[in-house]
Image 1 (cartoon, helix red, strand yellow):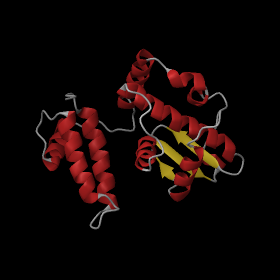
Image 2 (spheres, one colour; image 1 turned 30 degrees about the horizontal axis):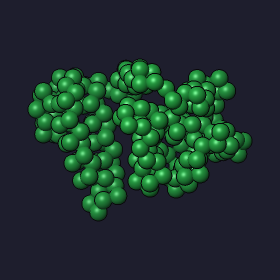
Image 3 (spheres, one colour; image 1 turned 30 degrees about the vertical axis):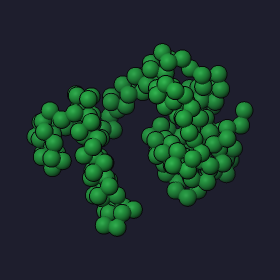
Length: 194
């Protein structure tokens, strides 16, 4: 089945060659291309993600052999360089997202998939762990207490991101990139969800 998001996503990738799934989802929502898909918030998130990943993998296949679309949950990139990407026909994520039967996953399956994703994400070696001194320094810089909650961190992140985003009048791309890295480190070190 041809995914209706393919053309929209292709246009977005042509305007900006590097994306993340959540930024694509936000842009598609803001354009009114993708709306609520389920009354359950977990299944709605899952179905949005499924449609986007399915479209990306279909697009990946359509672009070959002239262009290559690197598809990972946290990095999507259009490139002409075949050395930058390895496309495996047996890629389990690709096989999963190209199977439309998975679109109607049960709430139990969805929660299990989300738990597995976040467990793998938190265990990812790409996020540097903070020692106590680094954590204290970042918390002071971010004006957060030692026992900050995820909600407080997210609120502070939005304030700083709005202030330093490169698209803003006085934005700073390097400062924004540094803040994003700090946010990921603080998020990984947060033990309070609410």
